[in-house]
Amino acid sequence: MIPSKSKTARLSPRGFSLIELMAVIIIIGVLGAIVTISMGGATERAKIAATKSSMATVKSALNIYRGTYNTFPDSTSAGLQVLVQDKYIEKLPKDGWNRDIEYYAPTQEYPNGFELLSAGPDLVSGTGDDIRMTPETP
Image (cartoon, rainbow, N blue to C red):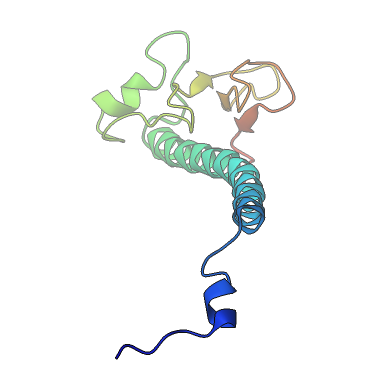
């Protein structure tokens, strides 16, 4: 004979109620939104850091070029391409948004130097989020 379950055992719930499942889904959704928002800022910070690193690479190549020729390349002629042609750098790095790094030499502020520029996160030059590097930038 098969033992029968007691009356209380048959009436007890065996799973989760719809309300409990909805509460868990809402909590997971809120946590997912928080993680997504916090990671969005980390992505921009990583792109800014990558841009600064790329600019530092170009700056090093420019300083080696200046050591050889006693001047920086003129931005109106060959610009940074001369660094690739003369094998100071293998290829010109891009900024964090996969755009070319702008190079200006000489400039009004640095008549014997240069300025490297990335438009930054908004991709518009001349705004407050531009990333700049000069010979004096550490």
